[in-house]
Image 1 (cartoon, rainbow, N blue to C red):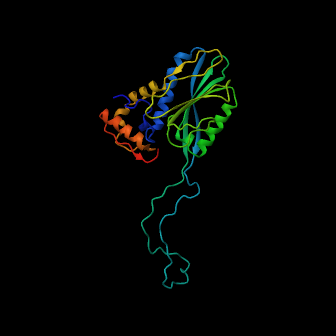
Image 2: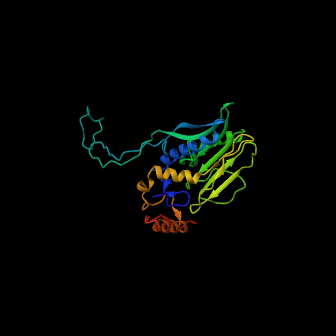
Image 3: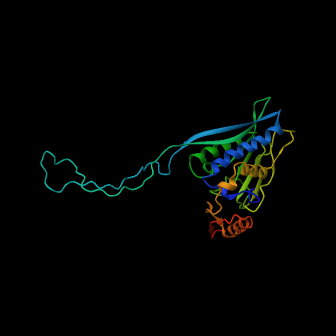
Length: 270
């Protein structure tokens, strides 16, 4: 069964699936662009690697174990030794652990000059939520904006605040930013919501080059089919983040029509 949603499938945003979806989508975009860009350009799949730690970097946890001194008078030889007289059930705690994060992105490279002409990013949660991943990503973003390199940023995650841009006060579930190096500070921002199809967008290249059109909707649907997400996704599960009441009713109706009978988590948020 194909993707039941006309645009982005919000169930793919689940933490259980998004890392895999992210990787598959990066590869799908690269595979679609290569035939259109050769022999002048090559499309390279790059990775940045960094480590993040748990939310409480200083507090490892304190087990709930009571150790008391025996109140009965002791021999002076052993009076300084603590004796465990009572223990309680231990608390389940989380340890602070380092996690290696590998994030893929794409670079379109000029074969003659070896220069990076365009960077394509598909955002991950680490890019948006506060923390080291967000800080590193914003540093890279600012560096690209200060250069002549073209930049495409694809945000298919409803969670957390969108990355900052100016001159936009329109809220939307998802967005695609297309920034041409020779037109900054101006850029094109594509906004769309769950009921909308993902818009196609042109891929900026070098001056005078024909810009191929990226049909991200078709690529996402292909990823959905090839990964058999129609079998592995649970359309009865609650969505994270939750939908507004209006969007949840719409999504439930859509899934009912397609025989999936899923129930979306409903909130009172608009």
